[in-house]
Length: 239
View 1 (spheres, rainbow, N blue to C red):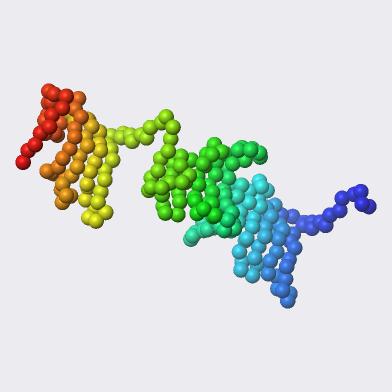
View 2 (cartoon, helix red, strand yellow):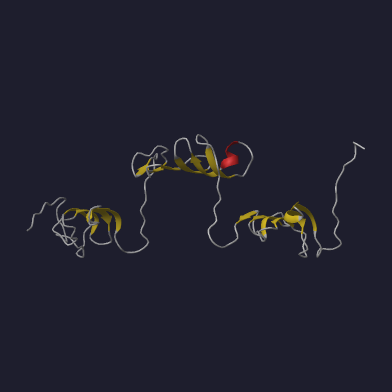
């Protein structure tokens, strides 16, 4: 009757018995799928020749690849060794992992990790946009999809924050690649010389002599050539 549903059923007597479809070669089971006699109603796809479970679907709907105990909607791996998940795309296409809260527009990709194979770019996006880009040269762009320096930041009416939760100085330090020595620093501290721009000696010694510009707020405890300046600008030469 074409108006009625049709089905093929495998009815096991209890949950300790199996109910499977076997795939054999010369009479030997290689693969099977169905309900195993494991006192549960979970669905399995098993490589019997290799004694491995390729796919498990729990009664909760959780899916496991390489595991029989998936604890999320999709769990991949056995929990030992190295596991790799590959997204294979074309040389001019994109590989993406999307985080959605809807099915259309930007709601379908509110967050995403994307590799642009055609342009060799790794993109990280939030809110439906692209906020971070890494190109094949290793340049990192924040707010810039075509970074032309190791760190390329592009923003509108915002600032870059470096925040120190302790009491030590905080800032930027520049080192030489040849010997790893510090060459210059731009730092803020809790002493008298609150803002300090310092150029270190060529041999990399941090104890000087060095050239620096200090911006003071007063006091007597700063590690500076002039502890208590009385002028708006003072140029001093020693040594």
